[in-house]
Image: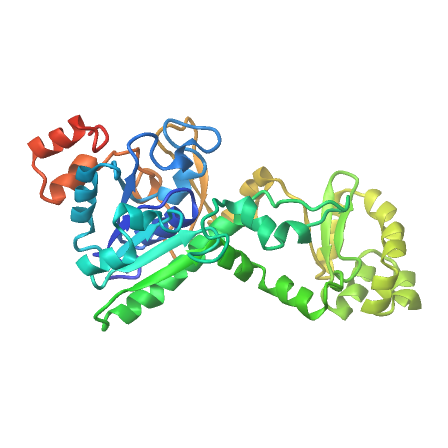
Length: 394
């Protein structure tokens, strides 16, 4: 065991697809676990076909599966289920993302698996949870954004609600599930039995929004708006965001903007009065911001320690000296891609090394023969399973 590979020696069976479950299992792999990804032979994990496809990968499947090994296995076939039971032998963790009830019908529910491996940590990822009126409904990130209030809360200046374009719910589910596994592994050192960890997109979405959720409840929907002049303003060549969180910061903002009269105006003397006069304040500031480029305002605001930032595009962020200075991004070569791709480095982990096993997502079934051999299958048996299409081509 080491800080670089604290989970070395752990065996993980990843039956999940999409992003939430796979990204959780990817984090286990990055911390040293041997993660065996079990995928359907036809098409594999459906994230391999989500969006533009490069070889047999996409921008969804690559970051969620770095460092794993893949076997393509037909779990509808009795022989395929027999293979999975052999893979489960000795496993420490199993991650699955079927709709509630499906894994049980396949014969691999928690109760069945723990009979074979009593100390296994069994992670179930679902949309709405394992019970309740919506348990069986299909769900992806946008569905839970809608259900938990995130889209309604994200109203634009046009007054219409908007889905946020990143898959924040999937990613937070993965992170919450990974966070739940760490103390479970610690406790299991002295425990005779494992446990079932249920991670739903719904619960993760609620946790992600806890501050806004609590505010809305306490304020009965009359949520106090951000303190003006917080917000986004157009400049002569782009956009800039301003954040005013504390009273003294408004005075600093006025100094930065060279507006002493604004600082002394009793109409804007505190948070409540600025909220009441928000429209008038914005109307006064908008033409001032629009008269100069973003860099001009950024320099002035920075000099007064006012929280702000230009609105970057992703390309701007990737090229920024700050991003490079802290090593936030690794640039990876990957099979199927004609150019290097950016992969955010993980907090607390060494940077991804392009070309290494931990910086590469497996092709569908790529490691099938090796995995089967490790689990006692001979060459003839492996060939027979491939001929019967129980496993993908090896």
